[in-house]
Image: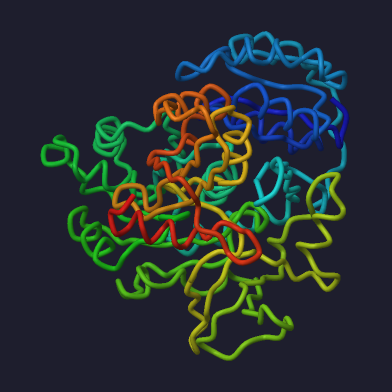
Length: 462
């Protein structure tokens, strides 16, 4: 592969994944990360839009026939020259030459291309550079006081910036050991904490709750565990206290998005439970953050809700091959519009109040209702549909779909529609809660009032 080419990796948390990431960086190749739960249409979009020249993959994972899906879409990918199965990794490595010179790679060169959906259309590819991801990782692990010789257990997917940036690069920066979990299982995580003397762990609240509630927790020696870093979901103060007390550790919250190379803000380990539960900490080292008015873009006073914007080394180079989307996200002077609503207090602590983007964070993973709604609209039994996020004790948020049936299709069921989604999109994108209404509540301009539906779910009316 030549410097600047895009090469995809479609696999779970394999050690070879991390070696591939380092090798791509040294070779000046841009690594495109692909969710191993993707179905053919999603895979095709990422490989086509990125113009990937190659892909490294596993044949199958968790029932997803990945090799078969890849074979299905390859006729539509003329740029894809090389397909390498991780089953043939040793053969691939043996094909290299020790005398091959490495190219010059600058800190400003692109390193990773990660796809993140907005509220419209297919996912966009956020192009991250070497300086951004290396510094985002080191500042994050410095704040949780990771030291040489420490052991970090990571269930975070490597296709996510939390995995391939914060943990993969952060552990190298700190000269710590990285244990990626192929597939999260609370019993396995507890066993590894005991046997490998794990001191640090990343995980969204859903992961931590599963470990706390597992029957093995009382019999496992978890005394080595010092800190846990959570990201991607708000954590109530009571849950912070419960986790710190039950697991006898210090808890941290990190906040960011793919477009910020993972990091935007972070709490300190010695912050109060209230600050950890009600805020996402202060801006990351060497990153500027401001809250702006939705009306005129001016910086708002302390405590006033507005859009969270940031500027610094962490801001992406842009959306790959999408100048219009890049221009709408990043101002000429470098400020990135996150699409998140929040406030900042006089200490610089940021509180997330909501999202401009219609996004649902389920167990730390970003899900996008429009993609799911547009798919459901293609079902002949669906006349109208609203997909939204509703509060959920286990996942933080859960997807819900409210459907208006098409005439003559009164017999269509929740099970039929859920299966329709699961067959075409990653399983976690299938709504968990369903309701059927004769009419959806609309604004005067004809838009669905999702907040009304959300309130009805919360009240138990749907």
